[in-house]
Amino acid sequence: MKKLIIISAIILFTATMGMSQSFLFYRVGNYNISGDTSMINLVPAHFVLKNTSSTAINFKLVRVVNDIPASWTTSICCLIGCLPSFVDTVPPSSFPGKYTLSAGAVDTVIIDFLGNTIGYGRVVMRAFPETNPGNFIQDSVRVYLGAHIGISQISSVVKDYELTQNYPNPFNPSTSINFSLPKSAEVNLVVYDIMGREVARLINNTKLTPGTYKYDFNSGDFNLSSGVYFYKLVTSDFSITKKMILTK
Image (cartoon, rainbow, N blue to C red; front, side, top):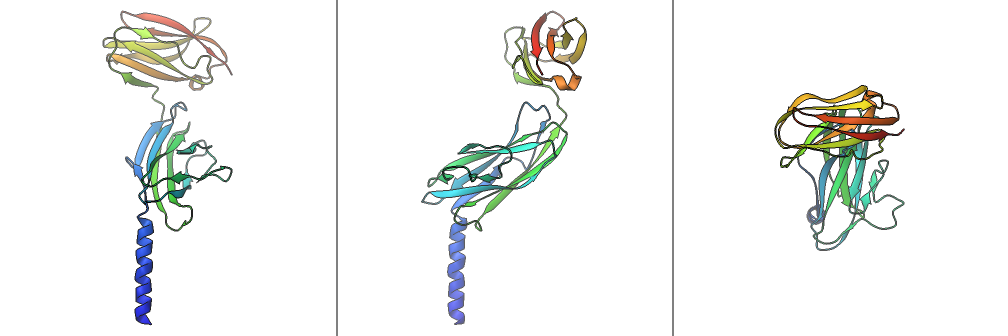
């Protein structure tokens, strides 16, 4: 009898180990990642789900922990698409099909963070075969959103000075302004109202190296109302002004 129990336990253990090796689920990159509160650019965390078995598997993903500030949202993107922020389980009950990976297939799962307040958030994701919820793997990520810096360099190779039309335009409340510098320069980027009064100084006499830059302008930071505005780029040997429209 004792021998039978031992043999049964070994068989159960072997079967369990086999199931646990049928897929992989893990975070890509560091546990701690960071972004800012621009509300324009999503801050993504990447995970990988891989079916390592020789047959197709119907999977489920569950966001088991969504510990974020009240003003933040997180949303799940995977093979079946990007889902609304309130959806914690993939596939959701309203989805007509299965979340299936064929033998050897890999899916990149992305958790997008978005928030307009400074703080920390943590998400824990769990993956398992639909038919065996107890055979799960989970991993987590922690995100810090800091103050919106506004400016970022998107290229280091340019031929001439340029100030592009902001996009989107009209906008509410945020828009992006791109400009290029062929050489190092002290830069001012200023916004004026229709009467010519300065209402926002986005870049104040800051020395920038050659390149193309993007400034993410949030009108809410300056309490601007609807209307026509002008943004002006100024260096020691270049100046240009363009018009933009804020609609609320």
